[in-house]
Length: 233
Image 1 (cartoon, rainbow, N blue to C red):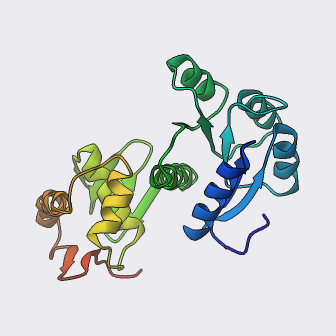
Image 2: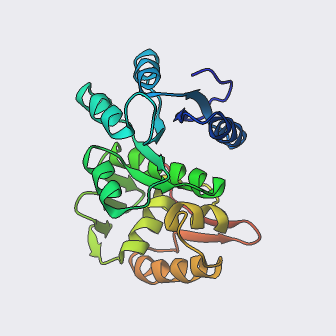
C-alpha cells in the first residue's frame, strides 16, 4: 500500500477523482493505510501486488462493474472483505452485491463517519471470525461457535448483547476500557444511545458472574471505565 499509516490497509476503487481524494484523506486521518485506483483492471493488479485488508469498491466502473470485479477476486482466492459503494439503492442490487461475495453496501451520497464506522465494524467481525473459537480468561470460558459461557465449569445464560460485552472484556482482560470504547465495539455504528446503556449491561453481567466468583471480576475505574480483572496464568 502506498501509505505511511501502519493501520489496516484499505483499497479505494472509484472512477471519480473527487471521491477517491475525499475517502483517501479521511481514511488516512482515521489511521488506515490507503491506496486508490480508478477501475476494475487496476483493482485486480493492486490486489495482486499487495492484498489489502478491505476494499471499498464502486459498483459503476468504466471497464467492468464492481460485481464482476468481486467475482474475479473471489475466484482467485481473495477473501478479505469488500464494501460496495454505489449510487443505486435498490434491493436487487444490494442482494446481488452480497450474493457475489460483498460484505456490506453504502449508497451515495454517503457520510464519511458512516463509511469509517462500517469499515471498523467489518474488520472487527473479520478478526473475530479468524480467532480461536474458545476464549479462556481466568475462570471464564467462552465458546464463540456455540455461544456457551461457563465460570469455573458452571454454565451461565447470556443475552446476545451480554455475550458480546463479556467477549470484549475478555479480549482486553486487565485493561481499562472506556464507555466510549465499549459502545463502539459492542453496539457498533448503528447504536444511537448514550453511555448509560453500558452501565446497565455491566450490572447485568455482574449479577450473573459475581455469585460464581470470590470477588467481582468486573471492576469500575471511576472516571476511566471498566476492567475485567483476572490473575495471569
